[in-house]
Image 1 (cartoon, rainbow, N blue to C red):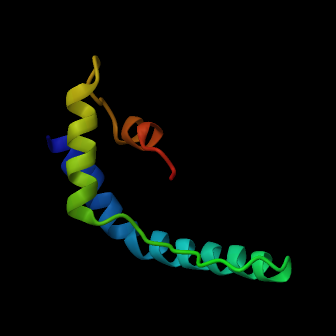
Image 2 (image 1 turned 90 degrees about the vertical axis):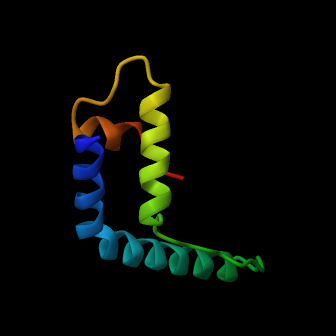
Image 3 (image 1 turned 60 degrees about the horizontal axis):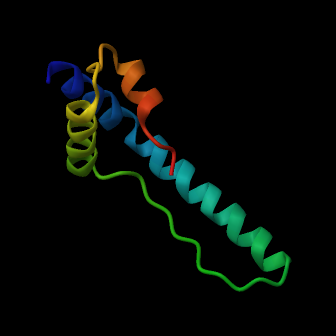
Length: 80
């Protein structure tokens, strides 16, 4: 679990980046949709720390080969 804690600590440091990035992308998508005449509500968020930790722990438990590096965790996380 030390590796997962390291991943979460790294994510804490990068949380503002993910939050700001997701907001900017949502605004860009909303503007493109509006320009195309499509009415839509675009939502965005950065992943909650406790929910992320639970998700990573669950994914690690279900893997045949456990995570060995933080990079493996990042590669395994879905981007949606």
